[in-house]
Length: 193
Image (cartoon, rainbow, N blue to C red):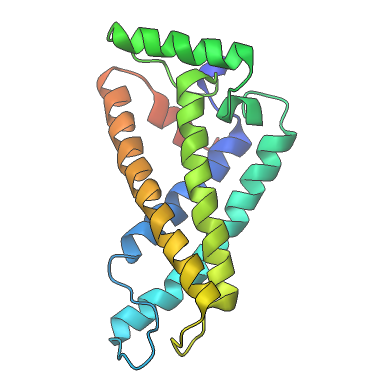
């Protein structure tokens, strides 16, 4: 296990927080119901919506902390790892894609390249969910009455949720493939020591 295949401890802690809150948010969204004017919700739908709102605000704090950490970090957890747009980063992504073509999976971890890019794209989806969810937390009418701004933000939140779900499933699949290939990626990410 090289240093470049292990994310920094702070990144692992923030990733763990995002994994828990985002997974919870996605799963609870399957049973909750937002307030609608004149419509009755079950107690479970109402309670799950309230929980979704408050866990969502916790997720917002974790996402913000992750952005601050990624912007200020000087190690392999910095923003260039998540968004490898520079010449070196693009070359690393292209090299990883060539390796995939030859059935060789990139090791994963904090070395950037394709794994970093995939984490960056997921981070953008989660950030979009957090941002629109936070706006909804403050502007969504509790009585379910119509509000054009809230409706628009709610639709954007739902649209981004499709990307968050796709990323969530893809992330689980990639973790499984890494494990099958003998990589310690999952163990390394959730080792908080």
